[in-house]
Image (cartoon, rainbow, N blue to C red):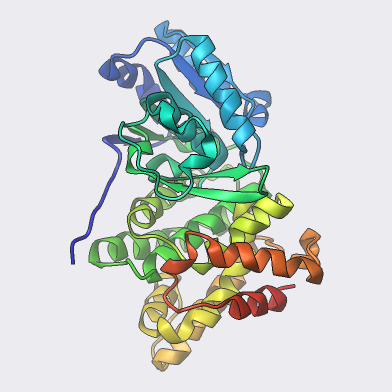
Length: 384
């Protein structure tokens, strides 16, 4: 079997790595940036930590901050207008998955105008040209959007999340600077960190997993288990913040190339229909779906348990597998993730619409165990 692995052209890591930005821009040979970010990051001065480096170097840019959590087709269209009006020729994405995903859609359409109808990008779009160069600086340790070939945009008309998969959208450069994450509140740190853990676990057990992806994902699981509780409880702990920043990137390197599974398939409609943050949706679903998948993943679950610090000596393979599920649930509870859909305003009568979208989601076929509409309905009901 032939495997493909796509990564950024270059990435920079470490607290203060944003200081590399002027040199990166010089290497790209571009003239004016559109800085794509969100209003909260502008308000709390995080975006300014990045634009200050551009100001010091005298590099021109304009800021577009009309990006919301769970970005929409309207956000993308507004960004396209801002890019053209600014006369920009590259993008600096500052934010979590929402800002970076919006940037990817903008960059793809600018260089592939035949996809100007944003909904045409859903699935594996046959674009011909690479995106406008994107320099991505994540401000959350979760989505790994800065190193993936995926992005997610909400189609407001059909009320669904479009998962777009396109090797042409990967940012040219990723700058992983944990200092941009220091002001992240505990709740968002927890949700994005559990999102990263979901990526690592689903990327480890997905049907497309293989030796190279397994190597990255199991290390990401170990790093997240070690660093996430500290980052939530002690937000100023630089070591934990940097550990999470690197761990989520490592998880993204792999899952971007091998796919995900049912957790993401069921989380996406929770975002499109109820605007629930993606990390919260993933984290709530993960332990229950892990238990359901366990018969197909016993050996790998034992490895997950050990990566999370569980001593499995004397356990059977099945006991070690269950220990992995228990460890994930314990971590979820420890960092304050809601455990029931009802806590998020979802009712029993909402489940059929959620289940129908989840079955059709592009991530669901990657699940290690075959799944039916009835299975999905039962799983939503179990966590109601």
